[in-house]
Length: 161
Image (cartoon, rainbow, N blue to C red):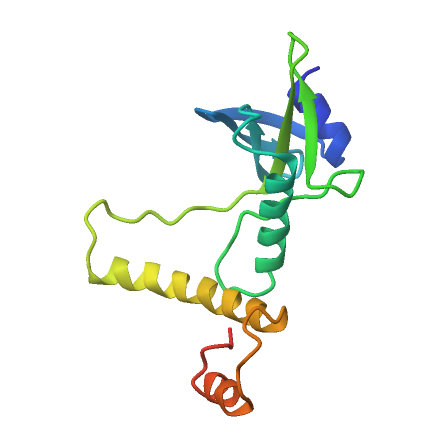
């Protein structure tokens, strides 16, 4: 079945064009719908390296992060079955998982690291770390924080976005 037809059916998108961006272990396409909205489609060709659970976990994590960090993320779209993952079958009958993400314009970083680039990357990593720490506290993976320690973390702004 044609990829554009499967995506159109599974995600209720009226697609106009597509472009292959990358072909490695995965296939990555850029697609554009009739409203000129851009999306990324990632077809996972290596079944052994990614299980459905890992792909699902990744999509759930990105969906969760979208409400907690201030930078743009490639948000996965839910299909008509309210799932992030869909499947497509190739000519030989092999079934592959794929995910459609909202397109995110990247911000190029120089090959040569400098203080400004290091600060940008450090700030992004700090946001992810703060989300991780909050999650561990909420899920009680860090259960032994005293009230004083929690107040100290909040005052130092380590737990706020």
